[in-house]
Structures are given as C-alpha cells and as structure tokens.
Image (cartoon, rainbow, N blue to C red; front, side, top):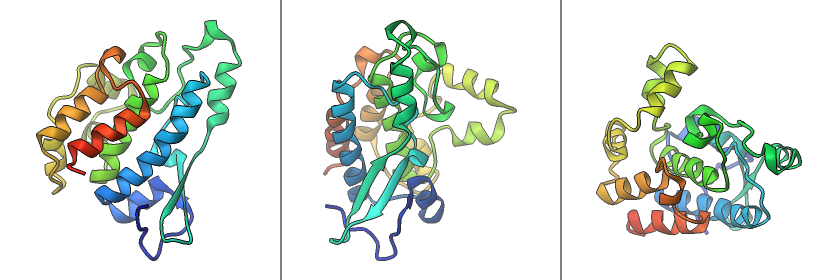
Length: 203
C-alpha cells in the first residue's frame, strides 16, 4: 500500500491537491488501483458513475499509514440507471472530465468513466487538470466545450512539463489511448487502464 504522509487526514482528493499540488507516482497508482477495483464491480453491474473527479474521491487514513479511497455520488449513477435503458444517455458530469459522448448526449457506457479516470490520473500527477489553461482563459463553459471538442492541442507530457513534471512519451501514448474520442479505442476496464498507467510510468 502507498504510504500516506504523516499529516494525512480525512479529506477529498480535490482538497488534497490544492494543498500539495500533486501526488507521488506511488500514491497515484494506489489511489487509482482502489478506484479501479470498485469501478470494475459497478461497471459489471451495469452502473456508470458519470461524474468521476477528485472532488468525488474521499481519502481516509489507514492504521498502516496508507490511504483508503471512497468513491462518492454513486447515488447519481443509480438514479440515472433507474430511469430505464432508453434514458441512459442522461448528460450528467463535470465538463473538465466528461467524455465526448457525454457532451454530445449520445449513448454512453462504462468507458465514459474510464475517460474521466485518465483525466484524474493526469491531475493527481501534475496538480492541475489537462484543460486548466483553457478553463482560466476562455470566456465560459460553451467556449471550453468547443475547445475540448476540437481535441487535445498538445501532448499531456508537454503540459506536465510546464508544471515541472516529467512524464514522457510512454505516458502520452497511454493518455491518448485512455481519452480516445472513440470509446472502442480506449481501455476495456478500469483495472486495465491502471495497469497500463503503471507500465507507462515505469512501475
């Protein structure tokens, strides 16, 4: 298990990011490994979370110094699933983490969560979302969504380097597969995505 800093307390990962501006590779893999384990089970049950983000991940300290991660707001996913199969395109999510099929309002499945998980990985490693620059410079949500629809303007490693974080080409290959516009091109499961991330980071 990842060793948590001595001052770890119960808090959302979004709050932790604001304080620390990034996690270690070991911590990121521990966090995402736990998230992936839960997602694999819920996805197998046909439940899509639809709004994964650091503010929906809650960390509590364990006695061994590690972190226990809880995924919050599954009530939204369950509520949407109960609307019926013909309504499972409900557009619920946070723009910075939303898959293209969520933005378009087209049919979506568990791979939308995997798209979000890739953005969470980048943010935990670097301290900010891939689209942070656009978020801070564009005039509003519509402009942001249009920019996102045009595709990624530069490799993830280039944006990470601007934060003083070295990720490399292997991470770029992993990231662009994980956030592919075509869901069929993405990883098949959350666990496969995290295993791929570990390999890309040389772990």
